[in-house]
Amino acid sequence: MSTPYWVERFSKVEVQRGRPKALQPKVQTTIRLDADVIEAFRKDGPGWQSRINAALRKAAGL
Image (cartoon, rainbow, N blue to C red; front, side):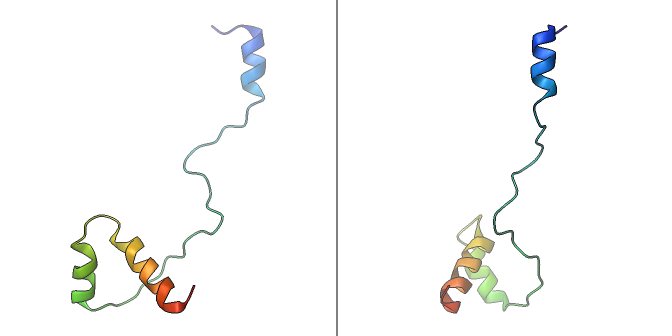
């Protein structure tokens, strides 16, 4: 059982659950790409979607 001091302290704290909200959240979309393009990015392992995103940003000049 907690002391009144700790009960009061914990009751004032805002509970945060899950991942913090991103400042610029991603947008879910559907895009059709050639199978060999997907395979080339996937062969380098996890993070292939982020690498595709980076390549698209570079191509768009962002």
